[in-house]
Length: 619
Image (cartoon, rainbow, N blue to C red; front, side):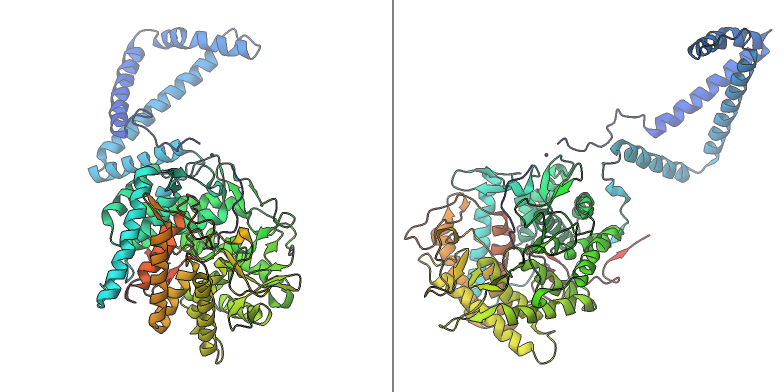
C-alpha cells in the first residue's frame, strides 16, 4: 500500500435519524384526521342552522384577526365583510377536501393504505435528515451473488497448513490487542496499550476495524467479523467537520467496506461505502477535475499538501481512486463516480509525458505537471497498479487502461530499471533527467504487479516480464536478508559501494509494511516456486522475534540495530495487508482466485468482473 504522506491535518455531531417524538405516526395522523373531520362537520352543522349564523361566525372568529392583519400593513378597514366571506369560503373548501380525502382513503384496500403509510414514513425520514443527511435508502436494490473463493480449502501439505495457522494466530494476537486497548480508535499503540491516530484520518474513527474486516472474514474469524460489523453499523460516522486524506480514506475505508460487502453480502457495507463516496465527490471540484489531496467531509472544501510542488496533486493519490469509484457507480446506480475517475484519464492522455513517464506532481488548476520527479515507489506507485487492475476488472475490455499500463511499463524499464554490479535488478527514481539509485520498500510491490500483468503483455513479452518480476522479488528479498533483524528498511540504495542496503538513518525503519510479502504471494501463485513461501516464512519468523509484543506488533526504528527499538505503532495496514498476504501465500490458489478477485492497493479484494449477470440492480 502506498503511503503517500504523513503530515499534519484537521471533525462533529453524528447524523441522527428522526426520533419517535419528531412526528405523529401516520396511523395516528389518519385517526386524528377522521376525528377532526367529524368535529368540523358538527361545528358547521350547528353554525349554519343557527339564526344569523354567518354574522356570528364573522363576528366571533374573524373580526379581530382581520383588524390585526390590516393594522400590521398600515391600514384599518371599516367593514371587512368581503375578507370574511373569502375566509369562510376557504374553510368550506378545506372541509370538503378533508371529507373527500377521508372517504377515498376508507375505500382503499388495506395493502394500499399500508404502502402509502410506508411512503410517507420514508418522506418524513428524508426530510428529517436534511441536505447533508446522506439518505442511503434511496439506493437501488441489488441482487447480491457471492463471488467464488471467498473462503478456501485447507492446504493439503502439513507444513503449509501449519504455517497458515501460525499467520492466523498472529492475526488473533494483533486483533485481540487492538480490541482490548484501542477499540474504535484508528490504530493501536501496542507497547503503551492505547489508541493511536495519524492525522491522515482527521476526526474519522475506526480505520483499523474497517481495514481488518475482510481479513477477519477470510481467516474465518466470524465472531470478530460480526462484532466489527456491529460497530460499523452503529458507530461509523462520516458527518464530521474534519479534514481527511482523500487517498487514504478511499483505499482503507471505501475499499474496506466494498470488500466486506462482496465477501459477506451485508448491505450495511454497501450503504456506508456509497455514503462515504458521496462525501468525497467535492474533492473533484477543481478546474481540471483532478481531485484535491485533502478534503473537509462537512464543508466539502479541499486543498493540496502545502509541500507538494506548488500546490500540486499527487499521482499516486488521484490515480488510486479508479477501482473503488467504478464499483461505487455500480452499487449505487450513480454514474458520477465513474465519470470523475474517467475524466482523470482524459486529462492525463492530453498531457505530454517526458520520455513516456508520468511525473508525480500535477497542478489541478492549470492541468500542467509540477516538478519532474518520477517514482514507482512513494508518490507514484499505485497509479500504475490501478491502470493494470482497471483493465483486469473490466473483464479485459478497457483497452485504454491496458495501453496506458504497458506503455508506462515500457518507459519505466527503459528509463528507471537498472542492474547493479552484483546482479541485482532495481527500479531507480528519476529527478529531472537524473537517476537516484534508490529503491523504496513501497516500490517492491512492482514485482507482483509485473507478474500479474505478464500474461497480457503485448507481443512476446510475457516471459520477459515474468523474469523481470522474479528479479525484483529477489532484490527485495535481499533488502531483508542484508539487515541484522531480517526485516526490510524503508529504502535501500545502490551507490557508494553498497547494494540493497539503507545508508541513511531516516531510511532504516520498518513499519510492518506489506509490499515485499505482496510480491512473494503473486510470484507463488504464478510460478509455485517454493522459495517464495520460504522467503515469506522468514519474514514471519522475524516479525515474531522482533516485532511481537504483549499487546500486538510494533514497527522498528532501525533494522540494522542488534536489538529492536520499537516505534509503538501497529499500523492498520499490518492486518489489512501484511497478514492477509502472508495468509494467502500459505493458502491454496482457489482462495480469492485472481480470475475473480482484484485487490485494491490496501489489499482489499473486490469482485474483479463488473458483469451484469453477477451484479444487477433489481426493480
